[in-house]
Image 1 (cartoon, rainbow, N blue to C red):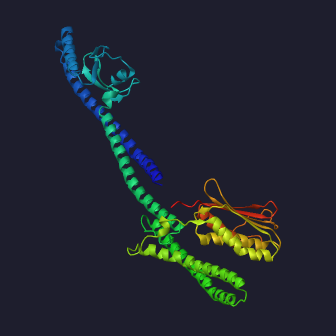
Image 2: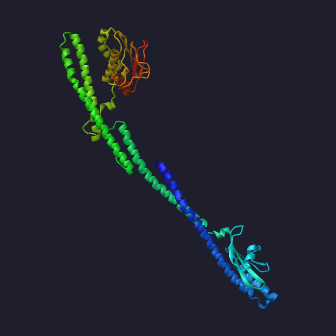
Image 3: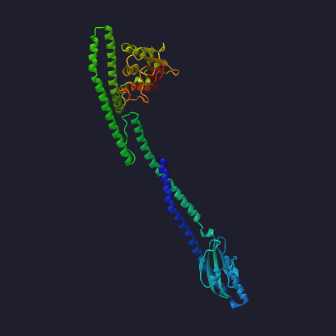
Length: 460
């Protein structure tokens, strides 16, 4: 925008100055020529008067008097041709020329009829012709010739001055346009930075209206949009927190029912599952409310009595192999009840990844739960944990079920199996937040294969 504004200003200013200064330069040139012509005309008339008196005052009209008259006239013409003066000649009636040689042209013959005039010869410049009548032998003609340089003397300096004024005006216009462009671009960039902060999730970002009225209006609309987005997100998160909170009552009832079972082992297993469900509900509530608190803290400013978050200094780390083994053992009784043959494989040592244990457990549960939900009883289930060469942890869950539908790409809200499609999205988010990825494919038995890679855990 700034460069375009400068180019537009330069082009517009140059056109306006050209429309003004070019005619002014031509007018200055014409004025200089008229002034030089008027001076030459005055000089020619003065010289005609002096030469006429010299030629008319020849005593006795004899040849000696005529010669003296010519010498007197020649002296007058010679004095008119000094340094820095225009070239001046007198053509006598008999064709003789006093002063610098000049041809007898049609203009000279026309001037002998008693007419004074100015004409421009083909060689350039301008010539003033004044007749001298009343002399012996006929009419003489005074010629004052102006060359091109003398005719337009001083116009070069004037043209340079006008050009300097034009350049100065263009530079001044560019300076003003640059300041105006900097103001416009600065306002647009500040507005863009606010939009980038909003896109990054900083709902406390607000635009400061500045610049022209149009950008003021855009800034107000951006702030209004930010308020609406924050309101919508607040309502959504509050609804999610409320819905999760409502689950506490049935979860508590399940926990009481589990405690009343007669089989201690069964009661312990179900109680562990209910406890995990309670932790998941609590995590949902905390996750739903924490961004709101963080946004409010950002809007209110930093608090001096609150220590910095540990997560910024110590990213989460967890043993993927241990978490996957624990969750596979949890699902094993259900797999055996359905006639499945669960298989688990992991390295002997830990596979530390950059993720928290709760998130890994939720991801493993989502993948194993999908197998139970979307494959028939008796279908095989295999859970594999491996450490890749770059330090990332790889979790692979395979089954011998029907697999993913042909041409179907699992995504949030669209699973192709009649579910909500959130299970794989939970795994995808956990993998991508740790610096990994998620891949879906087909297992060797024709079923589904889901591979989640997690970023390597940072060393302490």
